[in-house]
Length: 222
Image 1 (cartoon, rainbow, N blue to C red):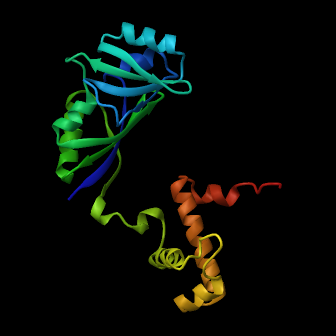
Image 2 (cartoon, one colour):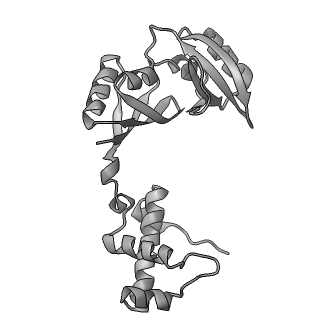
Image 3 (cartoon, rainbow, N blue to C red):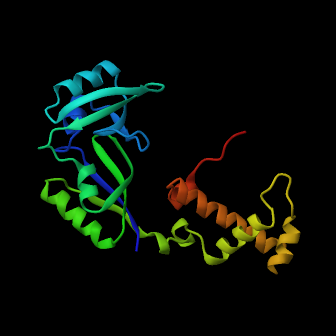
């Protein structure tokens, strides 16, 4: 069964570890489109000159070249020294695919797809063997990913789906709340409360905001 693992670890000891030491404000994001001999990475934060200097002096970087630039960030093709811990290659060796990768403050966050959950354990052990200390932030099976992981109850989920199917969220609306409540065989008030709770659950989940933060957040003045 295909699974997704979100893995966090320090960049120290990896291919870009020296760069984060040289320019602590550096941020990095993997480019998933452009093919290259090495790794295509968007680097930003410090100036391009500082990034070039850090790349040139890094013992972990064999070669690098600038591919593109966009609004204060630069896309580099980077080849690491064979003796350097290359986390991306380690993921591939263990049968995984890097879906996304970003780093800031010297910490990487990778989203990895694997065909079997056992591959996550193998990848974890490989990283530990290479003196990388990973933390599994999240692990889930694609087939079992459900509305509950967004904080929704089954009824809230079914209500939102019905609202979408009947055009409640269209502009203009294709169904009124009264009509939707009759379709779901619940009262107008019950539908209103259920929708509000569903909105709250989605917002707190997607924005990663704790319930107590929502309760104490100040109301806008306008």
